[in-house]
Amino acid sequence: MRYEGNLKSLNARPLPQWYDDAKLGIFIHWGIWAIPAFAPHLGSISDAFKKDYDRAVAMTPYTEWYWNAIKVPGTPSAEFHASEYGNRPYQAFREPFEEGLKHWDPDAWAEAFRNSGAKYVVLVTKHHDGFCLWPSAVDNPHERNWTTKRDIVGELARAVRAQGLRFGVYYSGGIDWTFNREPLRTFADFVGSMPGGDYPAYAMAQTRELIERYEPSILWNDISWPTGLDGLLQLFADYYNAVPEGVVNDRWVHARLASKLLRYRLPRRLLDFAAKRYIRKHPHVVEGVIPQPIPHSDFRTPEYTRFPTIQSKKWESTRGMSHSFGFNRNDSEADYATPEQLLSDFIDGASKGGNLLLNVGPRGTDGGIPDEQLARLKFFGDWLAVNGAAVYGTTPWKRDGTDCSDTQTDTGMPVRFTRSGNDIHIIPLGAPAGGSLRLRNVRLSGQARLVADGSPVALRQEANDLVVDFAKPLVGNFAPAVTVSTLE
Image (cartoon, rainbow, N blue to C red; front, side, top):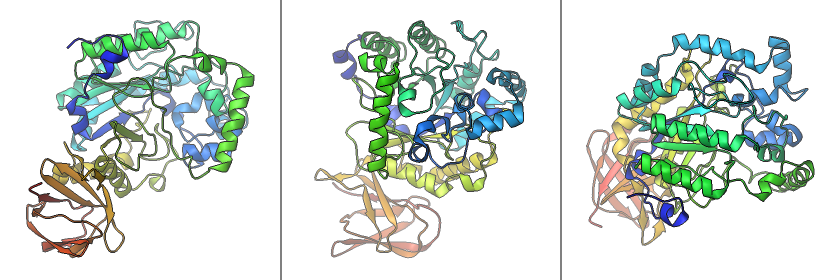
């Protein structure tokens, strides 16, 4: 089917099945910021806005925002830069990054991603600093030769596909600090900084170049989009016609009057006043980032958070393993989420119809993935190698239209459910030991087995609780899945 650049045509397009089934993807934030590899440790990005709103954008834990952070006097990043690099410009990090590419092994990355159980990979091809990880033929009029000489995008695409994985590209369409060099401090500064002038044509040309050269299975834009709606919808149609099983995310808020007004100081300050007031009144609500719905997308992208219930629209939670996406030289084991926490978030999301796009942040000096991150990828891979049937290709479990994804045991351990046809999968989010589990307020019957080894599992109903009896006692492995074949 050929698509046209209008909402009727685009919104009639079904979600490609491969993406719904995949469940786990790998995000890669890698660029010249990974040479200084510094951001302050204030907690999450939400914490930065709660604790220091007036310069929050320069105080975030995201190392990939380093160039902006060092422009704001008095920030930890500015002080670190002055101490370590004096008055060297951000552009000076390009040379050591290019030198580090001599050690980069895209095949080793791709193998690690496949072994993690991921089904697709999304590479940041251009982040907010505007530096491109491919030798683009579209010249940046404000920063000469602002690309790698080596085709990182092409090499990784080939390596990933050789491992049987899908390949996607991230592009920062709404922000480019080579076109708008104003230091950004507040939320309004950030959302109002989308460049005009010659930038919309530049972003469109580069995105089309990425599609033509690499035929990505995912087109993952960030922040917003600098053209009007008509141009954006035509881009989507051309992309789908070129890549029939491609998907686009939800971060394409097109240029409108409101975004243009935010280029001026007074509207930004009014928005900041309202944002500060909201955060002060609702500090517990402001966690992570949930982009606003747009006229057309294939999936939504909550960041460092996830939806608590089953959604009518496909979604994909994205997060780093620590508070940063890019590599932070100061992160220790204690700064990373535990493997169990990350896996629990993944299973919880899958039970509600979501995917997880789990980020790795390689070093800039040698292209290596830190050991702490590799260990977490291995943890995922080991679990999925045994329990993957309870996640891949599944849908949320609903009974009589009711969301059955959440429950807990009599000891308070959370339990999640997924479904494959007539099979219901039970996944405790913990490491149970012993011969049985009691699930509160669950009614379910059928032939059951432990997914890991196929050993039989007995089910018995005691009032409103389901008791799961194992043929041999569990030994404390994390999240052991049980499959119940029903006759529903």
